[in-house]
Length: 598
Image (cartoon, rainbow, N blue to C red):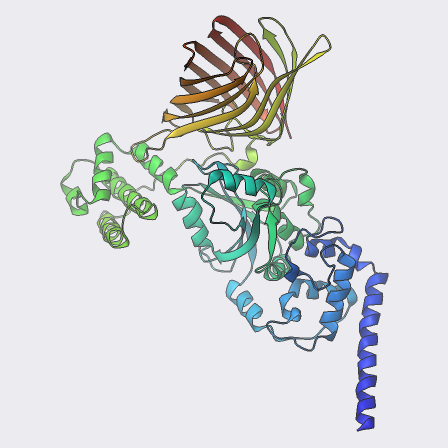
């Protein structure tokens, strides 16, 4: 018995010495300072951005990446449990990297759950997916990005989508915005079939989807998959402007290819559209695909159908007309095919939107497709591919121009951190959408400084109605400007709603706009604005608007704006604008200059 005890003690001392040697070697190699270890820790410097204690093995691991590395080596080398729930199986990315760097094996282990997932996923390639802006959702106007892990199957619908999002059931928009801006929600990674994400974004929310295939090797793909496994059920505080969905996709991509420095492209915010451009600039994108939403498909059908055919589509979708009755109607075979195809798309759109029960949907959809199949193969519907988001102007803007006002002619200098307004070129953006935050402009004249405007938040969604869709258009603005009487600064909040007609290139709108004004002459009023926008081609765009506001003090204000701009590329444009107003006195303002984007 004493001899057996002595052998156990001796064996333990040898095992501990081996761990000490590995830790000494790791210190000598300065592994805790290596970029890859910081990537695994999600630590830009010394503190991890992961906020879940379950991610760390050392007590101070979140704040001390060196301590976390040594604790990881210790557990890998000394833990005898190497089954599914062990640390050995929970952190395959850490284990693979440490084994390579230390030239050691921590054992084979029995990670059945992880191995089964990898076998099921069959990871071969990775695709960055960008659903464009949501038509009528301010929280989604920036767009969204997530990753898709592609298998060797030809169809990508059963591939796995890797998403990061805030977890909340909040329905109050103000509360959601506040918590989203200041870190009031936990964000989690999720992994689910790609067709479910397509159903959510492309079908339910009518968002066109762009897919960017990344040129990662199989080994790089596996490095990403190993780290995704480590992030299961791990949370971090979600911040709308920086630590958001797109930012966390950058971490995963850098894990796969450490030579890519994607996060270096960003400073104070991360816009989904800009992450697409960063991937391009880092040479990661190989091919691109466009998946039109159901809304885009139905609008394309509208362009091919006659007025009578559109009526039939609606009757077929509602069940008031039976598919077999199509044979007795006038029209070419092509028109009949398009009518049945559009009706099937509309039925599916209505079902996804909750307008039809599953039973009614299944019956209508099946009958429409059966009747369509009897007409044989025809010409495929042509859907014009929209401008690629990576061709859009950058999100941040510096403006330099000259103003010619009634009483002064200042040099105008402006700065806007994000994102896009109705006056700017829509290439790569959702037409008719606007989202601006902290747009500020200053005037300088005769060594005097003046604040011309400071927009806290400005949103707009000018969405034309069509035969199949009847969305409302709206916009809001809150901030200071000098548009109200005798060149004085006023704080104005305005919210409007109405309707629009036209298409992406040419549309007009009519909005009613209640307004509250504070400052030198506080007042409350309600107004009516009518306007139109035209994209001429070659990235030129004009906008004209006129309106009238009637205030409770019995006064009124008439105003009009004419603007034109030419975007020479993602980095800049030249613009001219003329604003006139008549509120007791007539005022005219002309401004011209350049906008530089970065």
